[in-house]
Amino acid sequence: MKKFLEITLGILTAIGGFVDIGDIVANAESGARFHMSLAWVVIVGVVGIIVYAEMSGRVAALSGRAVFDLVRERLGPRVALTNLLASYFINFLTLTAEIAGVSLALQLASSVNYLLWIPLVAFLVWFVIWRVKFETMERIFGILGLVLIVFVVVVWRLGDWHTLSATALHPSIPKGEGIPTYFFFAIALFGAAMTPYEVFFFSSGAVEEHWTRTDLMVNRANVYIGFALGGILSLALMASADLVLSPGGISVSHLSQVTLPAALTIGKLGVAVTIVGFFAATFGAALETALSAGYTVSQFFGWQWGTFVKRVEAPRFHAVVILSVIMAAMVGLTTIDPIKVTEYSIVLSAAALPLTYFPILVIANDPDYVGEKTNSKFLNVIAFSYLVLLVIVALATIPLMIATKGGS
Amino acid sequence: MTRAGNRIDAGLGLLDRQILDKDGKDSGNVDDLELFAREEGGAPYVMYILAGPGALARRLRGRAGAWLESAFERLHHSEDPHPARIPFGVVKDIKHSVELSISKRGLDVTTIEDWVRDHFISKIPGAYHDPGGTK
Image (cartoon, each protein chain N blue to C red):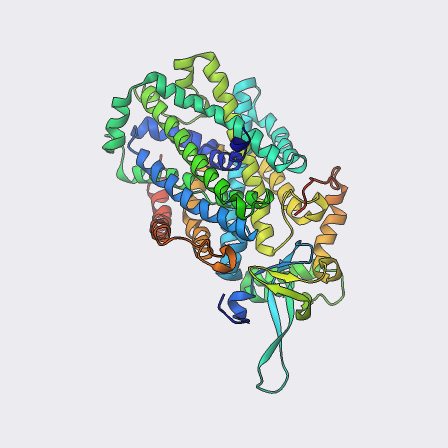
């Protein structure tokens, strides 16, 4: 059990990245519209985030420096500021969406309109960050989010592996869907897997937990198990939508529709568990993005940050977190559609990805930071290929978003 | 960082690195350096590390720099706002971070931090709660 608790940081990071409010719906929607033809993208994304999260965790364990420190140090103040503004904007949009998303999950459970839940949810997000110890927070929401495994159970029960593998192994674009739309969804899924706040949160979390040289195995376990699990949950959501929603001609645009496969195969209990999972995953993502807002800004300026010191010792970090949560709640209250917001923010984040991942790759090869634990040649080849892929995706993102009107 | 013996490339090995005080607390970044040459055309020495938005603004240039500089001047109390200057003599070691031999309390890098703490964060209940396990 103690060993298991050591990997909750990776699990929470991955759940917040792969199955936050926008991804829950995007995964189900891609399953309903494209069957399993986009499954390969999730696999490519999982490998990419594993490669880069491992490097960021290793640098954090050996030097005590988190990702945005590296961004500033390698890219200089001007380019780093551009990245900071872009990353903060994405973080903020996602935080807004998650606060609304937690409220939507509460609406499903209580039938009380989600807008009434927003102020309470925002307060709770801040309160957990202000009061709860980092390890405790990560364990509660990491483990609670695991109940989303219910979707794996759903797919298992339906057991139609033939249908799933047909499109997973031979991807094709169904009639009535355009090629640009297919690639728009591909970028959305890839962006969700490699969304930058995962490495901000993961590396800063490693510092919060005082990882050292002796934790390099813990780092690997977190990365391999956590992100693989995120990928499996993402694929299970897609598969359950392919098997249940696609034959019924149901297109997914709302959170309640994603609970349908669980309702049909497991019944009321399935729905209840699903809603708990949605709550935990979106709340976890809200914590992840609110903290990342504080981490990135503080690390850019060199301010004291983190919840491992007394609140008064990191005043500017907490001020950024508080103001971000308040502003996000206010934007959420404008009845902006949280699902659309994350879909856009994921795709926008794809455009900012190279600026975050390039410095990680450089520093993971710098003996000043990691001593003799620099990247192997093999790892560098893979990481560099991903960097090229990220640049291509970044260049393709904006034109595709305009051409497909956001995948509609 | 290029390091031959004790030589450090100031652009790569100093600028934009994290500053840590004697207790390992984050004390700003190396936002700029103040150089001094003993004789005309002689080799320059690093006299001070400059830290804080005042110094950062000058390196950002452009609109973002101008905005940051005016924000800093408004937030700063003194008549003549200037970036915090850390004498190079208190630098203990330079690895991935610049480590100082004194506490950040003795430097003027904490002006804005103190202001945010005194006027905002310290007023929230639980602000002095010790999370346990100091770095």
